[in-house]
Image (cartoon, rainbow, N blue to C red; front, top):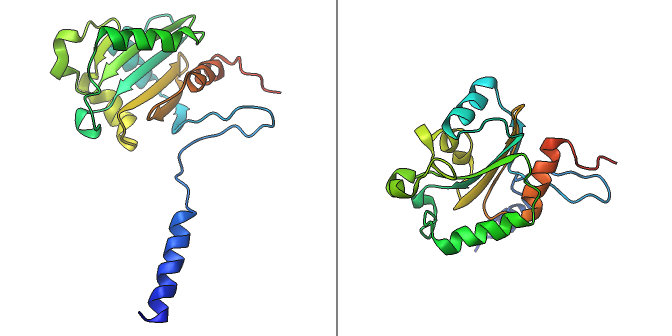
Length: 179
């Protein structure tokens, strides 16, 4: 193999192995945990109004959306709602202060399990609003979207931790230690 091709392959390998995905916004203050979010921002009034209308979000300070990506984007059926999964989610959120928060699950393909949708805790992604505006940017099986009444939000795609959700809520409530 010519030396120029070998050199090109080595350079390509090194450049690919050291590249980072532009995955998250991170706090970099000493002593603070990182906030891993794929996207952060602020919504305009019309998107806040849609969230309120579509998901019965009233006076709660925070809306927590546990999002299930489309079935085709996941390697297993991420749309199952069982007593075991309900118990798992209850335990997951028992470690997080969700006072004054509406905590729901939204399914990209909710129409395929319509009999499970109660429009109180489990919702279909109406008009694919969340998918088209937030979750199409990075595919995975799950995601989290946490937003406050002013429209400030954090979004993460993939498996997320209690610490991430807790930190998102604290940030949006303005309660995080800002040292």
